[in-house]
Length: 191
Image 1 (cartoon, rainbow, N blue to C red):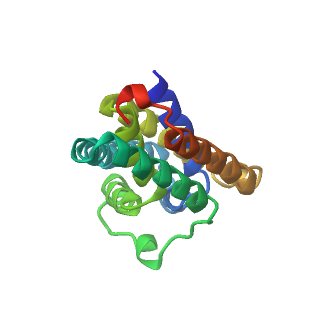
Image 2: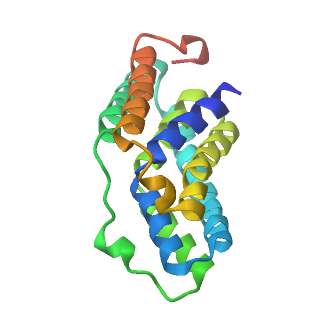
Image 3: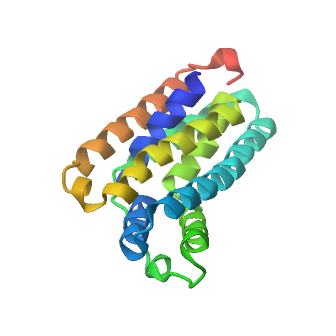
């Protein structure tokens, strides 16, 4: 349960103001069909985060416990710093294909999530918790918590949320995980 809750919280916070959330706003404004957009975001997130969690599990199997502890600790600290950098959509991510709402959203969201903070966080969380299913469920739930309101409420909530505060909280959570990992928290789990 801890892996699910931590994964949900970290990704939910990290996603606020992230480029994929900006993409969700853009897609909602362009198509004005929230249900297929939300379904496509869900499918893209499950596929992307399942891959990322598998990479995290593979990394765990390749590294010894001491090396893994340092890699994860430093990775969480790097994620803390990265979270404080505001995201912007790239020009290529705003050019939408003509494949219909669902497929356009699926492709755009999957591609935008590649190498994104939340995907990298999923890799680290899967390596940290050794529970791919809970991590993928948690990170997907966190993504949906941040993006479903973005799709349905758009501008109504965008101006009411302090991105600086949310990013600061997410950075603190990543930093706490990094420090705890470096200090040996999780030694019972093998790192």
